[in-house]
Length: 115
Length: 115
Image (cartoon, rainbow over all chains, first blue to last red; front, side, top):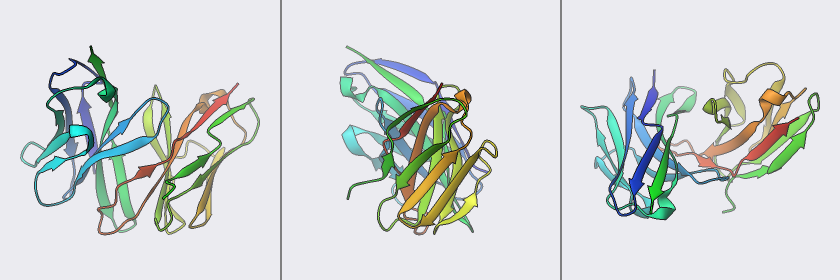
């Protein structure tokens, strides 16, 4: 079975500070991992994804995430927060089955950026 | 590409009325997902289709909910009769499932309010 746990439903950082959003997963098969961002009144959009290869993945808007198999983690980071980063962030894992892909989402982390 | 298109964007209806939400996936995508998002329950998968065939509808709340995908370019989610607890944002997402690497592309959502 696959699942995703996001630690911290709310995270506040000061503008210019490091952003760290935590995600741990469980998967019985090699996972594919995703981070999505949701701005108010919008759908989710892909920030970055890990499929295979390099474990440090770079995404849009200066975000990156590192796949650590030994820790079953896929934490999202950004060196310097910007006011426009305030949004809801979702971690997801994809698991293949003989009937196609299933996507499992975490409960989300709301990021507040303090000026 | 126009992305995933959902309609209506907003729907206000009275309890007992039928509601139909519509989705046009990205052309060429072979999987389609319906999600429901609420503050209390977060993002919930209702049903997903592969190649127009419903694969997993275990997330559909009850018999009042039904979903169809008559062809590769159109899907509907119907609620009949609607109840106030169905108030939520309903998202449609599509994906190209190739070797498990396809990410989800979300529509802007349909915000349903049942009075």
